[in-house]
Image 1 (cartoon, rainbow, N blue to C red):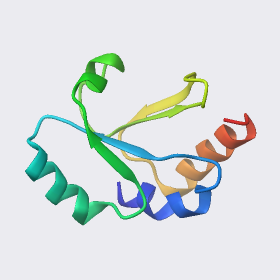
Image 2: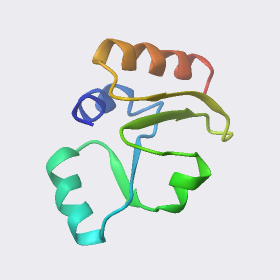
Image 3: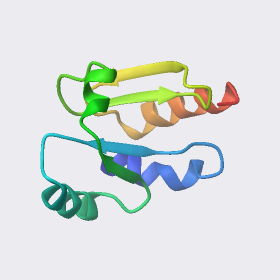
Image 4: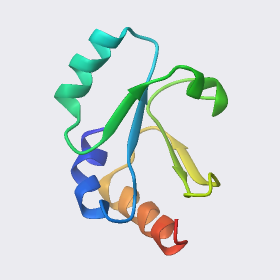
Length: 94
């Protein structure tokens, strides 16, 4: 998450970043999110885990404004990989 949070400001006009937490209570999640995130919005919604078949963390999804999934990966991505994927998403006009 620190890489995503660091990269997010560079894409603020074209990409919306949302972290979906789960498997914890709201107070614990908020405390952790407040330490990890300053540029990424977050929410606690465990239904998203089933919807996208998430079985572990970290996992990332790139979804267009029309709700089309264009990429996903399990595990942390480095800054270069993340920027390349985001540039492709932006190029699609997402």
